[in-house]
Image (cartoon, one colour):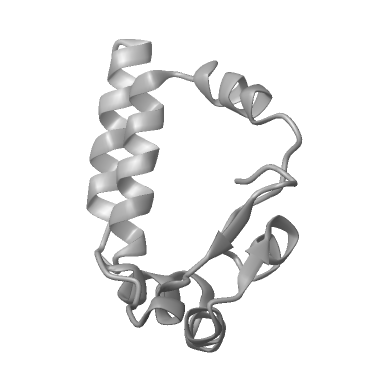
Length: 113
Protein backbone atom coordinates (compact mmCIF):
# COMPACT_ATOMS: atom_id res chain seq x y z
CA UNK A 1 0.00 0.00 0.00
CA UNK A 2 1.19 3.51 -0.74
CA UNK A 3 -0.10 7.05 -0.66
CA UNK A 4 -0.49 8.89 -3.97
CA UNK A 5 2.68 10.91 -3.36
CA UNK A 6 4.90 7.88 -2.54
CA UNK A 7 7.84 6.99 -4.74
CA UNK A 8 10.15 3.99 -4.93
CA UNK A 9 13.61 3.53 -6.37
CA UNK A 10 16.60 1.24 -6.46
CA UNK A 11 19.23 3.91 -7.02
CA UNK A 12 22.41 2.07 -6.06
CA UNK A 13 23.79 1.81 -9.60
CA UNK A 14 23.91 5.60 -9.82
CA UNK A 15 26.48 5.48 -7.01
CA UNK A 16 28.41 2.43 -8.17
CA UNK A 17 26.52 0.12 -5.82
CA UNK A 18 23.44 -2.08 -5.94
CA UNK A 19 20.51 -2.87 -3.71
CA UNK A 20 22.08 -4.95 -0.99
CA UNK A 21 20.40 -6.55 2.02
CA UNK A 22 18.43 -8.85 -0.24
CA UNK A 23 16.78 -6.19 -2.40
CA UNK A 24 18.11 -7.53 -5.67
CA UNK A 25 16.90 -11.02 -4.76
CA UNK A 26 13.44 -10.01 -3.50
CA UNK A 27 12.49 -7.39 -6.10
CA UNK A 28 12.23 -9.84 -9.05
CA UNK A 29 10.09 -12.18 -6.94
CA UNK A 30 7.65 -9.34 -6.35
CA UNK A 31 7.57 -7.50 -9.69
CA UNK A 32 9.17 -9.96 -12.12
CA UNK A 33 12.63 -10.08 -13.61
CA UNK A 34 12.03 -7.55 -16.40
CA UNK A 35 10.61 -4.82 -14.17
CA UNK A 36 13.25 -5.47 -11.50
CA UNK A 37 16.07 -5.15 -14.03
CA UNK A 38 14.52 -2.04 -15.55
CA UNK A 39 14.20 -0.29 -12.21
CA UNK A 40 17.49 -1.46 -10.71
CA UNK A 41 19.62 -0.86 -13.81
CA UNK A 42 18.21 2.59 -14.56
CA UNK A 43 18.00 3.93 -10.98
CA UNK A 44 14.63 5.29 -12.14
CA UNK A 45 12.11 6.51 -9.55
CA UNK A 46 8.74 4.76 -9.72
CA UNK A 47 5.63 6.66 -8.63
CA UNK A 48 2.82 5.12 -6.60
CA UNK A 49 0.57 4.37 -9.58
CA UNK A 50 3.32 2.52 -11.47
CA UNK A 51 4.31 0.71 -8.27
CA UNK A 52 0.71 -0.53 -8.03
CA UNK A 53 0.58 -1.45 -11.70
CA UNK A 54 3.72 -3.64 -11.45
CA UNK A 55 2.71 -5.23 -8.14
CA UNK A 56 5.18 -3.49 -5.85
CA UNK A 57 2.31 -2.19 -3.73
CA UNK A 58 -1.19 -3.60 -3.46
CA UNK A 59 -3.07 -0.31 -3.77
CA UNK A 60 -2.78 3.45 -3.60
CA UNK A 61 -4.84 5.08 -0.85
CA UNK A 62 -5.19 8.71 0.18
CA UNK A 63 -5.68 7.86 3.87
CA UNK A 64 -3.51 4.98 5.10
CA UNK A 65 -4.73 5.57 8.65
CA UNK A 66 -8.24 4.54 7.55
CA UNK A 67 -6.84 1.30 6.16
CA UNK A 68 -4.90 0.73 9.38
CA UNK A 69 -8.11 1.19 11.39
CA UNK A 70 -9.90 -1.24 9.07
CA UNK A 71 -7.23 -3.89 9.66
CA UNK A 72 -6.89 -3.17 13.37
CA UNK A 73 -10.63 -3.78 13.82
CA UNK A 74 -10.16 -7.47 13.07
CA UNK A 75 -9.27 -10.29 15.42
CA UNK A 76 -5.53 -10.18 16.32
CA UNK A 77 -5.13 -13.97 16.41
CA UNK A 78 -6.70 -14.37 12.98
CA UNK A 79 -4.59 -11.54 11.57
CA UNK A 80 -1.41 -13.13 12.91
CA UNK A 81 -2.36 -16.50 11.39
CA UNK A 82 -3.19 -14.96 8.00
CA UNK A 83 0.08 -13.01 7.86
CA UNK A 84 2.14 -16.05 8.84
CA UNK A 85 0.40 -18.35 6.33
CA UNK A 86 0.57 -15.87 3.44
CA UNK A 87 4.26 -15.25 4.06
CA UNK A 88 4.98 -18.96 4.30
CA UNK A 89 3.06 -19.65 1.09
CA UNK A 90 4.76 -16.78 -0.71
CA UNK A 91 8.10 -18.45 -0.03
CA UNK A 92 6.79 -21.56 -1.82
CA UNK A 93 6.23 -23.66 1.28
CA UNK A 94 3.22 -25.94 1.68
CA UNK A 95 0.65 -24.24 3.92
CA UNK A 96 -2.40 -26.49 3.79
CA UNK A 97 -1.58 -28.47 6.97
CA UNK A 98 -0.72 -25.23 8.77
CA UNK A 99 -3.95 -23.64 7.54
CA UNK A 100 -6.03 -26.52 8.91
CA UNK A 101 -4.27 -26.32 12.26
CA UNK A 102 -4.59 -22.53 12.50
CA UNK A 103 -8.26 -22.62 11.50
CA UNK A 104 -9.02 -25.30 14.10
CA UNK A 105 -7.19 -23.32 16.79
CA UNK A 106 -9.03 -20.10 15.95
CA UNK A 107 -12.37 -21.89 15.76
CA UNK A 108 -11.83 -23.43 19.18
CA UNK A 109 -10.69 -20.06 20.57
CA UNK A 110 -13.78 -18.22 19.33
CA UNK A 111 -16.47 -20.89 19.41
CA UNK A 112 -15.23 -23.16 22.21
CA UNK A 113 -15.10 -26.35 20.20
